[in-house]
Image (tube, rainbow, N blue to C red):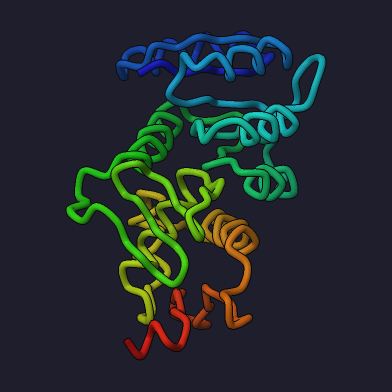
Length: 231
């Protein structure tokens, strides 16, 4: 598994690389914004760990450029206590985040969790058709009226979980476990941010209603259009 580590803290990079290589990752570390962006877009990596503060640029801008061109999984590293950086990263399309300094073992677990989201070993059906959406599970793509949508791996998995139970409430922790491959922790807003991004991309349905409803205190539900629900 080829992993790209973009961080200007060379000592931290060396520490993380030593641990992650024992976990069978092949780690390449770069330390500037431009080198990081060039490597991230090279097509050689299965995941990226990206710091926000970098010489010569901003990690969030790198993330934005990556998201314009690919769904490469990205875990952001943020300064401890900088919640706004985490929120901005998730809004742009980060798959997960960790505060610095981070525990190498936790980073490895988060990376494996993110990478599992992109695989569909437990999926038996080929596609899900819902309203004007077609969710192709083997190709990991969503078509709206035949046109492909630009969803991240995490957004795709959230939509897939909700679509399978369309018209039913999916409990929040179950949605997190099935789409993020982990349980939520106290004050963890990552699922909420991914849902917010997904809602913006999906927009309302053809009847003008929200596609994804929040059932306060319980979870979330994809609400099919009325005709589809009655069919």
